[in-house]
Image (cartoon, rainbow, N blue to C red; front, side, top):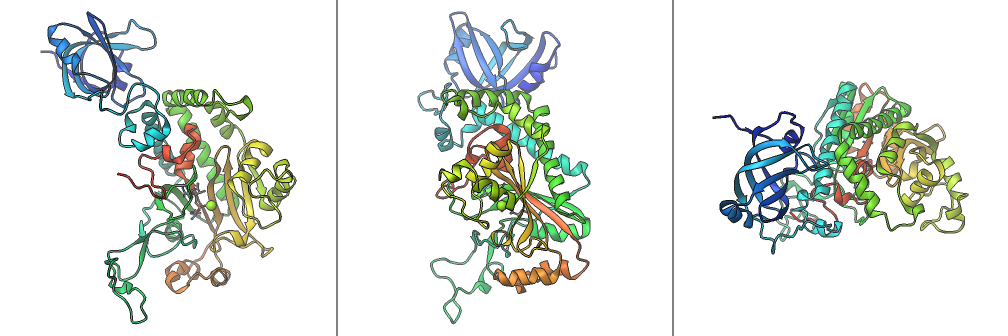
Amino acid sequence: MEMIKKKSIKELLQITEENLQVELMAWVKTKRQSKNVAFLALNDGSIIHNLQAVVDVNNETDVLLNRIHTGAAVQLQGKLVKSQGKGQANELLVEKLVVLGEADPDKYPLQPKRHSLEFLRENAHLRFRTNLFGAITRVRHAMIFAVHSYFNQNGFYNVHTPILTASDAEGAGEMFQVTTLDLKNPPKEENGNIDYSKDFFGRSANLTVSGQLEAELAAMALSKVYTFGPTFRAENSNTSRHLAEFWMIEPEVAFADINDDMDLAEGLLKYCVQYALDNCSDDLDFLSQRLTNEEKSLPEAQRSQELREKLKTVIDNNFERVTYTEAIHILKNSKPNKKKKFKYVIEEWGADLQSEHERYLVEKHFKKPVILIDYPKEIKSFYMKLNDDNKTVRAMDILFPGIGEIVGGSQREEDLEKLTKRMDEMNIPQKEMSWYLDTRRFGSAPHSGFGLGFERLLLFVTGMGNVRDVIAFPRTPKNCEY
Ligand code: 4AD
Ligand code: MG
């Protein structure tokens, strides 16, 4: 007997050999049936394209076909032949058909039609099965791979920084507490405060908001490291760019200044975007088409650039490097500011920039990615290196079209005295951070790093509009399903 090879649809569509006997398992996207023949569009997620299966209708197959609807899982054997129809290379002439799992069309929520993104968010357990989320999931995988590949090629070592931590890296206090204490009856100290010495770790603990501080420890020995893990922020931001659980890429480099840091970030972003163009062609076709359809009803001026064109502008342009002070000058004199069109009108130097300002700089003024540097120290974290003006720090934020801030980073303050002074000013307890300060006590060296929000990168690459649609199970205020 001939050996039957079990193959994915991605493999089957690429086979050039004729009349190969094959087996596959997949889900039915659609079924079309006439008197003598039925066509099944099959997908197994290996690629966005479907494989068409052709089934002769007879007494035996008719019974089986009646059990098959959109969403059913099937096992098929048959002969792979060149497709007669246009648009696909191969199709399967079915010789054996097994129904693995039925999907009752009266109950199955996904139908072969366009569902709204809101509906799919409410059915996140099933949305992997749509073309859209298949594409997003594959692009997400490709971007994870690209990130690791970029750092590996550039001599970086990956470190896993802790997810459970006792430190607040950003000093912003937006942390989720982790405890095993009985919340109904917690142990108390004499003064009435909760006695955390009785808690699991013998102290209070949180989910990490950033792996940076631990990555700095590693960089002070391995020179070039990066961490890529989940981060958690308990900020009550209900925006299309914020998640309570998101993934962040954080490189940390010894003997690197702010300019090296910007070069590294720009290189990483360009590499990832190029990787998507080179490796996610089919999915980008689909995502580009989706975006065009989505925006069809908008006036032309409001439509976004075609997805691939937009991706190419990132690769073809040097990111514009501008100081915060210059940016404030541009914004103050901008039309939307003068006409009070901004929700937050820029009045003076020192103002924190909102996403509307960031997007104005990128989309209207410079028309390419922008790196803002030298922010006022008051609006940035304690660990950033103070400039000689004593007013600004060597921070850098990268702003992207349609997104706003995609990267936040800085050169770090390596001077122990300046750092501890800043911590005192910002009420950051030094005692608990003694381990961190040891990097500045022993063999301190200039170093820099940044954080790239992975979901924001995916927003950009996929052309999606909401971070909740580029992570499988989004966590946002009042939403922790699954
Ligand atoms: O600017 P952030 O807060 O910087 C840090 O956490 C530094 N410790 C990074 C470093 O220097 N190692 O966050 C970095 C990036 C942001 O630019 C944004 O892309 C993303 O993380 N980000 C979020 N993404 C989704 N949801 C949120 N709530 C996010 N907060 C930050
Ligand atoms: Mg930031």
